[in-house]
Length: 74
Image 1 (cartoon, rainbow, N blue to C red):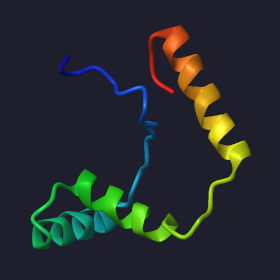
Image 2: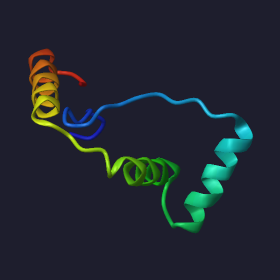
Image 3: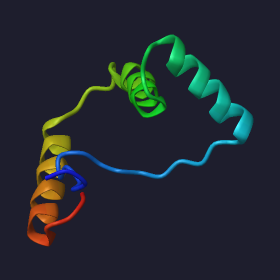
């Protein structure tokens, strides 16, 4: 349903100075993306080399299970 959070995703709030936000908007426009898409792409690219272990997989599963029990966000 529209407007509901995806339990498989972790939502955060980040505050940027106005000049930085305008730079993000301009770079996103150049990439034909929304600012949110652009930020996700940049962060994803910068953590792509971080290896996840079996312990990380358990942490992720526990967070998803907890979100499911709460019926809300991770």
